[in-house]
Length: 219
Image 1 (cartoon, rainbow, N blue to C red):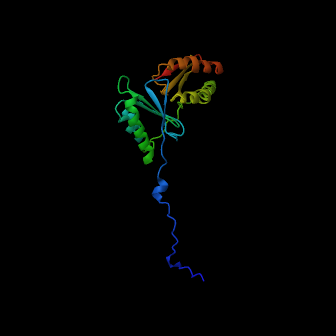
Image 2: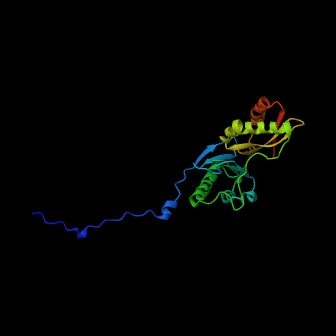
Image 3: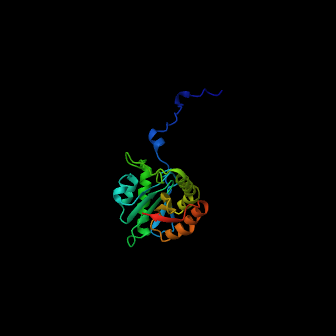
């Protein structure tokens, strides 16, 4: 006869509840880097949203104080300019200063620390730029400007973002037909920016919008 099983030693081990801390633990960040047409600018892709929509450029450390991440990046010796895109960050270094092989490690560390802590991208009361200048135009000029902005958004900005930059509308002079554009990120100060404006953007705008006679870069 088989003796009855002693159940006194049996214990049902409760499953360990997932701690709130574990639920909040951010997923690992794997950051890729890409070269841009501007040798002084490098593109960093954290594999997640940066601004999500729109872009913002910080040209000085004072401007960078509006963002905890930009502030941390400007504290790295050799960083001259910071640009946030929808899903990327571009960093421009000072010419003749530290090389990328010396700058990449501290820049990667600053970006990883930002996502690990879950800090907001901007400080209180700050927000990303919407992009184009929002000056209101009247009559036929308003239609021309709307067409220019639409072409920039659908045909030009997506391509420029691949190179780590952005091009946004600044103003349109209806008397002369000149469009003024602001180049940001890798496009700012890029040796090929003039060729991009003339051979690419200007030709495209003149083709689709007959009122456009010339495209100029504004600072």
